[in-house]
Structure formats: structure tokens, C-alpha cells
Image (cartoon, rainbow, N blue to C red):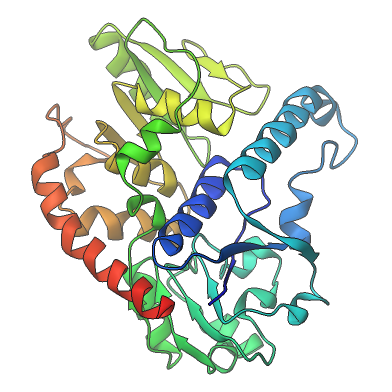
Length: 350
């Protein structure tokens, strides 16, 4: 049997590359012929351009963009088994697999993919179609349904699996039955992630800030926490703007990012992937909601509620919880979720 995974696997984003590796890893446990389809989504490809447009800001960022292109390409070459052929919108229909698996990440968020319906596999195929932990990025997709008939596109899928319960409910509203499974980052063992950590270790204890969207409240909290506990603050920052009291880490490989995250005393994040890795690695963390993105926040809230970790999200008028997350209880709650996800993957691979 040959399995082809269709995901966002060509962007220079740490979480995206790591989830692509994780998708490949968890399916390879039960099938020895798994590859990630080397698909070029036009909008996602644009994110890799060294100079997307002429501006002083973009010109200054050229060295950072070039480093990201090289480091992410090297990571993918080493860790991800791509299809030998590249595919685009016109040629994806020519793929030939016994099983197609779409996921994880926000590959069904049309705002992110530029309305790329190929992530819904809109072509006839001899291979069976599935999704695993795909994310819509929204809780209301009625407008997409009215415009693109997502329900119709998904009719020939054997099973549909989504990453968030809110996504399952959104699908129900358009008449599509879906299951809820764990993000693949939580399905890979912490030991495997730790073995992939590479780079220098900082001697001074530190807070690590990893945000999908700049958040002044998160930065203020990180500074205050670090000052109280006599720590430094490091931040993954691929921009050129400096932040007072914070050391920006601009030239980090994917493995280096894992290393910095794994050795932090506290992780401050508003990224779903940052949160998932923090939980899997048993790192103390605090989550800040994305501002003006209530539907996006549902992704993190879904996971925190499942694991009874709601006290670790920072909201207005919060009381700082100094306790470490109760990792033994968290693992007990994760076990049945992992088992259920694993059984679903086994079903696909049969």
C-alpha cells in the first residue's frame, strides 16, 4: 500500500514543517510506503519569496529570508520523504496513491491557502480519500459552503478527521460528519522531538516567546515574569523590529528552534503549534489569545479544555498561576485521545 499525504509542507514555518514530519512519522508506523506529496500551493509558495515586494523593510529582511529558505529546505530534505515529482493545481489530479490523507494544519482554511480547493482532492481517484486532524481555522464556514460547496467536495472521502472539536461542529452545520483527533505534534513521542534538538544551550535560565501574531501583552508578561524569576527573555523573531529587554533569535534552524523551546523555563505563545510542543515536551507555558481572531482562538481553547489546562491562558484581569501544569494528569487525559487517533490511523493503513 502507498499513502500520499497532502499538507502545507513547503512553507518556511517551524510549526508547519514539524507537523509535516509528524504526519509522515505517525503513518509510517503502520505503513512502510508513505510520502508527502510535493504540492505547490500558489499562495503558500509566495511566503518563501526572498523579496516579495520592493520596500526598505523587505530589503533589510533579505538575509533572514535567505537563511530561512536554506535552513527549512535542509530540514525538509533530511526529515521529509517527498514525492519525486512536483505537483501544481493542474497536475495534482495525476497523483496515484492507494490512500490519500489530507492534513494536518490549516490546509482547509481557504483564507490561508488562497481558496485552493485542491486540498479537498476535487478529482476522481482509484485511491481512497481521508483527512487527519485537518483544521478549518474557523468555526463558521457557511459562506465557504455557499460559494464552493465544501460538502459536495468531501462526499467521496471515506472518513473526515479534524483537529478541533469546533471544526467538527462547523462541519455538522453544512451536513458533513467528522471526527476529532489530535494534532500530529502530540502524537510523536517527546523523546523523538528531543533527539531532533540541535544547537547551543544558553547558560542563563530564560523565557522563550514564540508568537504567531505579535502581541504586546505577551511581551510585557514575559518581561515581568523573567524579571521576577531572574531570567532572560528570548524571542523567535524573523522581523527586523527590536523589542526592549528581549533578545531576538532571527537565525534559528528548525532543529535549533526545537532546541531553544525544549530548554526554556517558560514558553509564552499564541501559536497552536507552540502550545502543542510545549505540552508534549512538558514545558511550563502560558498562552495568550490572538487579538481580534476569536475563531482562531478556538483552536487553542479546544485543546486546553480537553486537558483541563484553561488556567494557563492569560486573559484580562488574570491571576498569575505560578504552578507547573499537572503533567501526570495531562498525560492521563492525553492517553485515550492518542489511542483513538492511533486507531483511526491504523484503520486508514489497513
